[in-house]
Image (cartoon, rainbow, N blue to C red; front, side, top):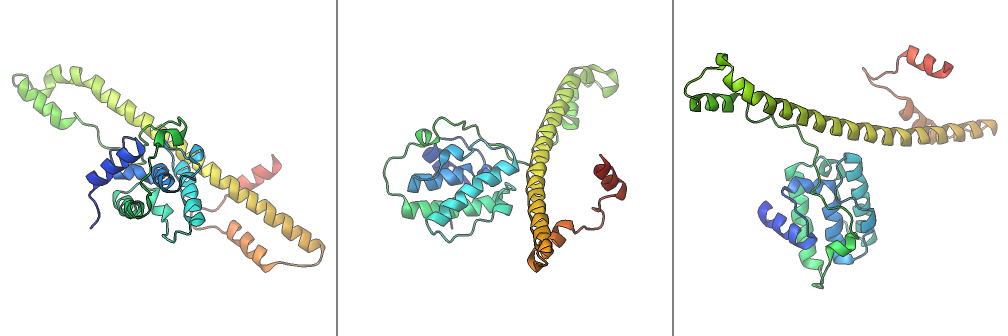
Length: 246
């Protein structure tokens, strides 16, 4: 069996001089990159975003990690799609593996994680997770009532004192949801732009081949995938017409 979560976090925080509180935070990819850098000293830490907050930033970190694995011929598969979801079990298993790899390959020489990061922010990374229900609602209101000499909710004494806290909780949740939404929109635009570039390249290639009286089945298959739809995701005809006449 591997080390416990507590042991792994203590080792990670000591090695990298960070303050991770949950294994799930490793799903941002930054810590994994710097663990490998402590072994090989060749990971481009200036490009690693240690305080990543959005999934597209997590993926960028994992691409750097994959390049490191490839350069050093490490055959361990990196299940990026699972790790970036910041689930505890997936990241615990990978962190246990990378700790065993570090134990085997670390040369014992001193490592300065702060210098390697060159002053980059090291805030404990956020993880994308469901918002927890706010505390201090029904349960604590009843507790407050018993301490207040048996007052009932209809007197209004408790609602007046707890309402600002409830509003603040809702406002905090709204801000967090807005941050998540902004990250999802950036991630959507990032991948859409890539697909659009591929679509243009395929179309140009097919047009050039058509001029020469040739065809490319692979390009046709790629184009078919790009234009395929699923139930509920078809583009309305009116939307297409409006875009073309704009």
